[in-house]
Image 1: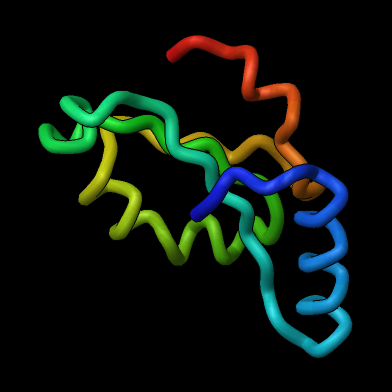
Image 2: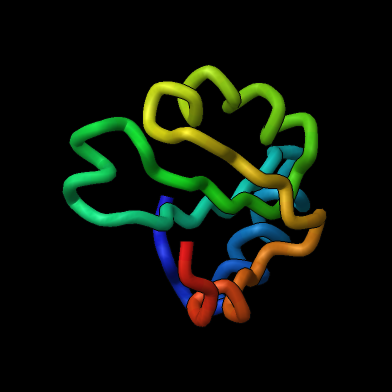
Length: 82
């Protein structure tokens, strides 16, 4: 999980998918305190089935996880305040 630029995320996704893999971009929203308390918010885009497969991990880290669509590159989310 990282916050890379949308173009790089899309390039990585394309390379992985072209090799038969699945890609999910997941951004974490929250503070250090929220992380320590397991109260982060996860915003994800990419392969929907991979998002579902990752739910147990997301639940361990956060209070909510949201699927934002199939296209990686969540740049607009940098301006949201969770």
